[in-house]
Length: 322
Image (cartoon, rainbow, N blue to C red):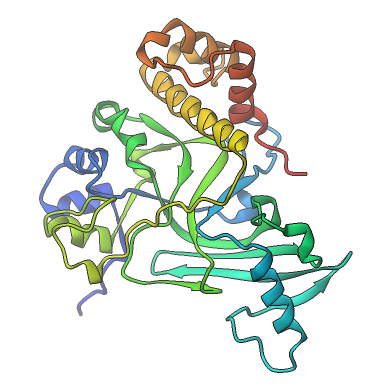
């Protein structure tokens, strides 16, 4: 009897099937020709790996849409109609203090997401604004999420050659696939930014069958549609500007730059960044960054106290949503 095909593979299984080494797969991922994925845990089990009190972490979600005043007015007009809502919104209900909410869905072969969105009912309050991340709450998700290739690139050799070596990640993406369904149609997901740094070993990494099939046909850059019929590829979606203030954009850019530099330093000097119990120490991590600052010049945030605060958020507490 013939067994069904795998939906995804471990690195060991994929290397055997492709007749190559695990180091080759890691290299293809490091140069952006292969997406490596991790399994997403249940929402209620997102536990801080650096904490003994099992405090759930918060998750920030970036969306590739902007819902402005005109969109809200349209939704409110549809709410008042007796006919079924034609926009694909499956639930539009009254919420306390003059607001309403609806659910958003994202579904592909390898990842599914259900989110709850709350909106003020007075559209005038949203004149010129888009909905922020705080309006969204993850109700359920399942499947796999992809690791950014640059997180693998900065520690490619260590991950390929050292047993137990881990890569540090603060951002994950929906994996590529031929079909993705969004409901409502203007809803979409670009990436998930974790409010704490997570570490994964190569034994926790997976390759989807779709990604494996791309690889054995010559590979496909995660940022292009070359070397393959574009109609069969669902590429990573580009981030759409949500009209944030200039100051907010600058702060977000600086924070992202700091985290990337910090992860690079952590991968190069892991022992210098850890305390007596081998856990990551924000103070030692900060000192290590400034001791080796020439390797990451120009540093996006140069104030040592600010850097320490950001590292403490990443390691210990994360962002606290109000």
